[in-house]
Picture (cartoon, rainbow, N blue to C red):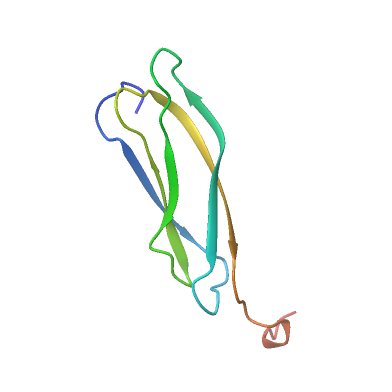
Length: 89
């Protein structure tokens, strides 16, 4: 995305270490960005296709924005198995 042309979306599947009982609420944010300062800095980040097992983390930009690096952070909150359900703890 550094050239300001080409693919303007990056999609990564996030898989939870332990699945939730139902799809959780997922909050995503940008923890770090490294963008060219000679153009407008446009960015969108979101969780998509959320299931109990995981979600797609989607970062996109548009126009002539130049992105060198981006770091995403996320938090999932939802119903999980009760500790009594784990045999190995």
